[in-house]
Length: 383
Length: 126
Ligand SMILES: [Zn+2]
Image (cartoon, rainbow over all chains, first blue to last red; front, side, top):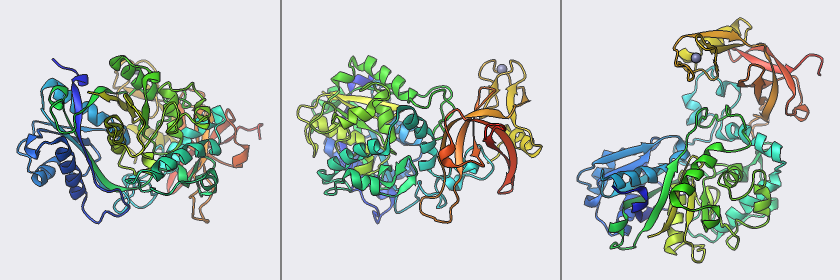
């Protein structure tokens, strides 16, 4: 019986990231998937498992018909929106470790800017699902920015976190994007003044530049056994640990019913499990990829993972720790604010590149990378 | 959208009562409501009328960022005396005057065709 740590990521692929792809979501999924399969040195007929998000619009059978995959013996979809990002790897690796599948393709593709825009109050997406009355929407929580701000307000108030503190993260993310040719904001760094001068989305919590992008694009990953990875084209990146944590009383988006909203309890318990499974701790991590729909969640995650004490993320960031030359470079591709919002799966690809040594903003000698999506996460390492 | 599990809440609001769903077996309050009690697994529920008093835990202004005609509307998390948290609106108060722990009390108002609980600063505190 093998474990998740006996599996490896052997292929990654992506389309360009844009605001108007000009083609269908299925085409984006197919292009990214084929790139990942070729990157692994495999052919589509080697794929016998598929994993994506419950929210992904691309049907597994349609994608098979694009790629020419013969038969699937494993399919799974991760729930909870972006919280599924790192869970996809756990689902795929568990299938490979158990023998349910030999090579699993993970894909996520959408036209989230040119198609249905999740972040708009009345242009479909979340708002279109709601009628009235209900416990949230009817009171004015009609966009993700407002929904999450009601949570972040407590954190910022408790620890005296200012908008400028948030801006210091955004400046770093945009610096990283500025030197990543795949990033939408390639060559477009910002200053703290730019952040402060961008319009308020939810005053005084979120400026425009605190919000993740809305992007069109597709990404894909191939996972197989670590043994098999040793003989493959680009080698492999070991999945040292991958897990999820969903706790009693928690909710997605409207996560207001836990005792203390100034911490992200799921991130803490999820990473405790990661540290235990991988036999590592926060100090062993060379690079961290952290899912950020909005800036404040990076702060909550840094504390939840134990990279700094509660309430001290603002100091950790101000002291330069998350920069490329710092003790814990974070979101070296620019994050979902700077590179693109492919629902957090693009963060996993960057984690793989860091360990392969092929990232645009390469951290020298990166051995262990944490890829966190708040409620799901993984630690990647060398084969 | 009103589900079967929360109809009591909106019916109560129409009668001017803030109702919480409490387990008929063990008395545990569930908000937002669920059909099974997580403590004793009873499927029998009653309602308990909340005092309507609580304190402010967190809040935002839900004004639309770019529509100038969009009114200011404070959305708040209210910690009720009964030990559960509720999303509602804070009324008759300026944004700058809201603070954590502010004592508030419920009143009811029809908004967009539905009677909804709203909160304002507790009498004698204004
Ligand atoms: Zn009970």
